[in-house]
Every structure is written in C-alpha cells, then in structure tokens.
Length: 86
Image (tube, helix red, strand yellow):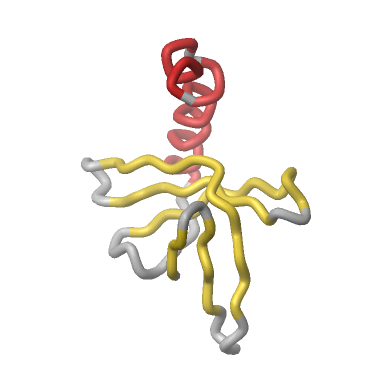
C-alpha cells in the first residue's frame, strides 16, 4: 500500500496495482490500527472499509470493527462541528 495525496495504491498478489480514493480515515489507538473508507473514482458508491496496523498492508475488518467504523463515518458526515472544518 502506498498513499499519495488522497489516493491509495494497492499492489495485489498478481502484481497489478489498483487505485482507491480515501474518503475518510481515522486512527484507533486502542486497536493500534488506522481505518480507511475507500472508494473507486469510477464508482463513488463503492465505499469499503479497510484497516492497517502497520501502514503498509490493508486488511479486512471484523464485524465489530465495521460497526465502529460505521459510527465514526456517521459522526464524520453529520456532526456540525466537523462540517465547519471540512
């Protein structure tokens, strides 16, 4: 995984590179992970949640992590204080 600006380049096992845009990310110090909401520019509705513990590889999230991430996204999108900063 390589992050440039707002884009994540992911090298797949076959060596091909896929680019995803970062919609939102946050760090969870208790889990020692950074959670990323990613989408493909050609399909903005393709929002997925992935996590990274080392900043180099992405992994799928557990159901519990997904629920937590959904709550964080809801706060990000609906909190008036955050909206002022965006």
